[in-house]
Image (tube, rainbow, N blue to C red):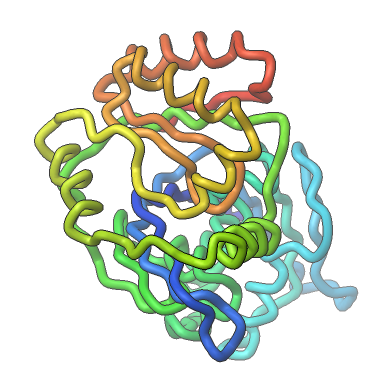
Amino acid sequence: MADVIRCPIKINLILRVFSKLPNGYHEIYSLFWQKTTAERLTIRPKYDEIIGDSLNIKGMKIEGENLVMKAVAAARKRAEIPPLDVELEKFFPAGSGIGAGSGNAGAMLKLLAAEYGAQLSQEETAKLGADVAFLASDHVMAEARGAGEKMTPFAPPFDFRWLLIFPKWSSGTKEAYAKLDLLREASGTRRAADRAADMRKIEALARGERAGLMPNDFYEVSAAERAEYAEAESAAKASGARGWGLCGSGSAFFALYVGIGEAAEAARAFERMDWVLKTYTVE
């Protein structure tokens, strides 16, 4: 019998990047928000086979090792798990910053914990990636510190429809951090994050007010390289979005709407822009 599970993605309502840690990662502060979306895993145990795991990916192409199978390997250190036949339905492009691959891995870890008792600690899960640790959790929102592995649940003070705008370019995590480091080295300074000002944006959203551009240290780099982000900001504001910004360290842009009708109308406007690959609305 097959298990079919839908996978989560995330946006970073706040993403601040600080200095490098001894392990080479950067210290961050982030406010994560997750929702479940279109990507799905179908998993069948293969008790009568000795060939091992198999992974079939449908939809968007994935380059390199998939996080789903890395999650399975990590879980096997905690419990006996039979060979698995895994089908992954991909919808979102890589390098978009919404943690889709991490959400695939997070969904797999949840299933393996429930089915086989393969419960990983938060620290063990974070070794697969900071986004994996959050997306494998039951937190709708969480504050993340350290390299992203130190999480504190954050009670959601609002709920909006997400409109995700995927451009025709992508930005990998390593590439994004390298560009941010170069920008800071070239300028010789780094503006300190104003935590109080950042949280006032969240408070504005909680009151149903327009918060505008949400704090993300990668935005300065992306907006300098791509004039299209200024166009995205203007479109989000004109369409009544309450908040908008980069989804994470990748290329995708989000806008937050009170109603699904507003989000759908805005999606049609964005889809007329020649730099937009696709849009996706999350209720």
